[in-house]
Image (cartoon, rainbow, N blue to C red; front, side, top):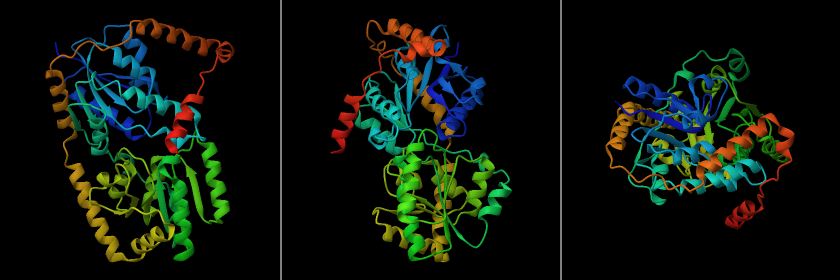
Length: 412
């Protein structure tokens, strides 16, 4: 009987890079004849019918010793800890965890999740049969943590969501004689939309008064940070900054169609799909050379390594006003995109699956003697939280002071 190959992850999101990759992997595995499910702790309501709750997999024989779990690791979760304890073989795909220091004072819950996620990751080198980064940057981080063997399963984006007709209201709003500077991505601290605003303000002040900035991306859960961005805009006296939140595929297509330049100031990325989306939509890219960004761009676009607003504004002006330079940049982006799209994602995935299934068996996962008792207690606690929320809120709250103190010490 052919081994089953399931995927497990904390949450399956709608329209995000990890979610799209998970769905693509599932299609590839099933087409190759593997029985394959997507096991999650939570899922977007639009995708729930494609998933199986991780607790159902524990309470059945759906995951056996000869099966393979592809574990997408991006944050600490109960699903992650449960996957660790199951008897199957395992491939870990690391999507990177943003250092929690970025979220101090902005999102306490995410500080805790990222902190514990990075701690959990250090337990996995002895557990997994193969560790894959979805970029060379992520692979190198795995190797530094003691994982072996490691390899890269590259993100090869599906651009079907950008092949739709652009939203007519977006075109009407932004397709004019003005210069559109665009950033697409969640409005969260590590992506540094505050620096994008500073650079745009310098560009508009020094070079081009008929310019606007469009920031497109969700800020759900980061309303405090959004307020800080609005305060920054007011303090700078910056004009024509449009923060439009999460957008539909048609709106996103319209934004790229109207864009004259994609500006990225992110300081931590595991891959950064919007860079490649900009390549696909033939928008020149100017990006800060940090973490995975240079490898993702692969010789396309323009990188900068100094966050001086006047310096970045000069680069912006050159890319927008010098059409010959912009054409050269677009040619380099076309070549980088072509190299990425020529990668056989499905073939690489299946070879990694075969490699993990053929590897020598590792010892049973080293879990504590009372792991499954604690697992059952956690299930009961979840039921209390759902059915008796007032009783749940009366329970003692975990002290986060130690975590915050440790992170503040790291920043000093």
